Structures are given as structure tokens and as C-alpha cells.
Image (spheres, rainbow, N blue to C red):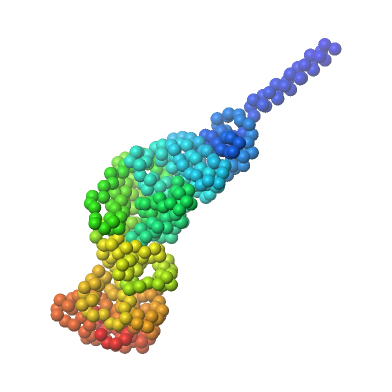
Length: 476
């Protein structure tokens, strides 16, 4: 009997010990993440929390937090894998989620605050972690510059995910400046500004330059070979603390407020590129990316001259209707490699934007080609006084207000323009030859050799240095 009692007690004790051991060694309710140290969800009833599983801190189960953990873990998986292979430093962030409808997004050092809607949006939690990395590692001059910070976050996003941070079509200079008024509808609007934009406030400022700089930087990154990209991915977190931003001083004040804004944007871009390129202690791959940045900006049309802006085409019209603006805007969207603008006596439209800017914003507009809508033939003095900013001018007779298709002219030249617009009178002028004729006291409209081309129903010059190389309509 005694043996049975002892056996029963030992069995019971053993079972209790197993249960106690299982309870003590059980996996706590937690988030399985090497980046997130804890998650708080603020609800109307209070704060519900989960720690990282590495902390092994037991907390009551929370369905609210449990529903968000798979979303978080899914979004952070690629980032955690990248950090595991490339980063020697530990990233430990705390995330506070606001369980309401407010559009809230803030990062303070390693602390991330955002509304549940942002948590579920594409790329927001990843960008928040990147911002936390920069906030805890970057030099003060970078932290004081929100534009530079966002551009560097875009760079990190592309390095880690292999995707460009912005979904915008290719942007060009100076057309990107016209998009400032569209900031609140753009893909380059930062999370901190969602709430302000929802209330009708416009906090954009120089952040509009993010679209240009980030696109050029993404192009620079794609110039790296696979081996170079691997080394850059390995060193980029060590390169970030080495970047120092030069103090940004525009240097002069212009009388025109609009032109002052343009001038400051030019200086702003110059300062960022130079600061990146002159940072000491960065890797050879980072140096190559930053050197390539200057090249890519030039490809996108950026010029350091403040007094003038150079574009591919300037369309000159006295008045532009909304319907015409839509047509020209669509044309610019179909030609993302080209920079197009419309100029009226008082306004400039940097296409595809349909938002007008004042003429004084950019100083003198120069371009390879210009299309001049006017009723009747131009006087040579008009061309001499106002067309010297353009290499070639296509004068279109707009007396009849007929629809004109400029696409063929931009894509294939004046001959294709003539083929696509058989009833439009026009004159194509080579401005350097025109000015040369004037200097020699010759009639700039003089024709030495010309023939009628039946396919285009237009005359073309047989003289390679003729001022007028094509025309249809009355002889000049």
C-alpha cells in the first residue's frame, strides 16, 4: 500500500513538473523579428503590446496585436534577410500603431509611430525602418535636411528591395519644378505630410526635387555591375554616417520672387550632388554612384546655369486653351525623354504639368527647337529679336485654327510633320543660318535651290546652309 502511495505521488509530481516546465519554457506571445523590439497598439481601451520573441517576455495574448503581427513580419522579411547578410550592426526599433483613422506617421530615432492604415500601405513600414536607421546613424547635417534624408531612404529602398522607391514616370529638369503645386497628389509626398495634405495644407517646398534626385540616383545605381552592387549593398550602412552636407547658402537675392525660387532650386541640387561626391571615407562603389549622379542629372536636363533654362522644345502661343493644354500634356507624356514647355506672353507651362508658372521664374528659355504659332508669315526682324534662343524654329500658320499634330515633328522631323499635316502652312527656319545671312547683309529668306516635294506638298531646300529648309504656303 505504501509503495502504491509513493508511486502515485511520484507520478503526480512528475506530471506537475512536466506541466510547470512546459509552462516556463513555452514560447511567449511575441513578434518573430530581429528588427522590431516591441509593438504597441494604442486603442480606445488602452495599450496592447507584444515584444520580440528574442526578449522572451510573457504578456497576455492580444488579438488586436496578433492580427497585425503577420502583416509586420511579411513586410520586414526581405529587410531582415538583407540586414542578416550585410549589416554588422543590430537594428532594434519599437513600433507604435495608432488604431484609429488618423493619417499619422512619425519617426523619432528608433521609435516609429504610425496609424494602422500606414502599416498596411505598401512600403511604409519599410521606409519607416530605413528612416530609423538614418536617424540613429547619420551625421547631423543630413538629419537637418529632410530632402537629403528622403533621397537616401529611396536609395536604401532600391538597394534592399530591388525596386525603385517612386512610381513616377521619368522626370526632367526644369519640368519637375512645375509639379510643386501637385505635391500633395504625388508619389514623392512623404508620410509626415499626409495629414497636412488631407487638410488642404501645402508643405512641399524643395521636396519636389526628390523626384528628380531619386530618379537620377536610381539610374546611377543601375550602372553598377552585379559585383559592384553586392559590395555597395555590403557597405552602404557604413557609408551613410560618412556623408556630410555642405552648408546651403544660395548666395544672392534676385528681384523676382519666382526666379529666386528657381535659382535656389539650382543651387540646392548642386549642393547635394557636390556634398555626396566630396564625402570622405565612403566606399569606392558609393563614390561611383555619387559621381554617376551628376551625369544622370545632366541626361535629365539639369544645367547649372541660373540665367537660362535649356529644353528640347518650346511651343510659343499667344493663348492656350484647356483642350490644347491636354493635347500638349499628352504629347509630353508620350515623350518622357524630352523636356517640353509652352510659353505665352505671361506664363510658362512645363509639360506634362498643366499648372502655369510666371514667365519670370526661369529667366530666358532656350531650346533645340521651337514651334511658333502665329497668323501670317513672320517679319525677319521678329525672328532676329526673339528667336535667337532656339536652334531651329518651326513657324506654323494658325490663321485657320486647324488641328496640328506635333508628334511627327518631335519624333522624326519637319518632313514627317509635313506629311502628317497636309493642309497646314509652315516655315522651318535654321536660326544660325538665318543670323549668318543677316550678318552678311543678305536676305535671310532668299532661296538658291529648292524643289517641290509631291509627297509632302511642300518645298524643300537643296542648299545645306539655307536659312529656310522647308516651307508650305506663300513664298517668303
